[in-house]
Picture (spheres, rainbow, N blue to C red):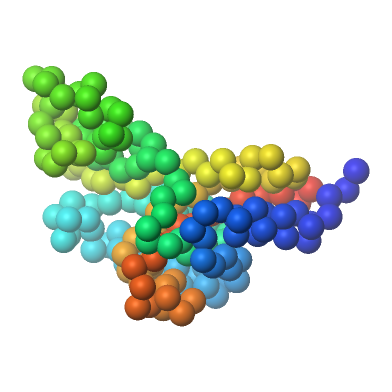
Length: 193
C-alpha cells in the first residue's frame, strides 16, 4: 500500500493545529531552514549564560535533519509540552551529566540531598561529579508524541529554538510583538526512504 504523502502532511498539520493554544503552523521551506540554521549556529557560537558557557542545541539539529520540518507558534499562556527530565542539562566532554533541570515531580526527590547544589529552584549541579574537560549546556531533543498515531509518520523529534531564532520566526510569521513561544518539530515519512 502506497502512502498519500500530501494526505500525511495535511494530517500532521491538522493534528498539530488542533493542539490547545497553537496559533500558527508553517512547514519550513529550505530558505527558512537555512536562516534558522544560521541563527542557531550564531547562538551556539555566542554561548549560554551571556557567553559564559558553551551550549549545543541537539534538539534543533535533530529536527532540522528530518525531511519535513515545521514550527509551532503557541499562545504564551499555554503549555502543550510536558516538561521532561532532559529539557536542559550540563554535560562534560566525557558525557557525564554535571547538572540538570528538575521537573516539579523530581524536585521533591532531590531536596535535602548532600550531593547536589541548587542553582535555582529547578536547576542543580551534582557535587560528586568531577567534570572531564569543559562543561557545556545541552538542549536535547524533546519527545513530541502528538503525531505517534499518524500512519506513515516516523522519527518524530522536536527541539526548543534559541532566543535569536525564536525572534526571527515570530517576526517572519507576524508575531514579533507577542509573548507567544515557538517550537521546532521534524519528522520523516516511511515511503520516502
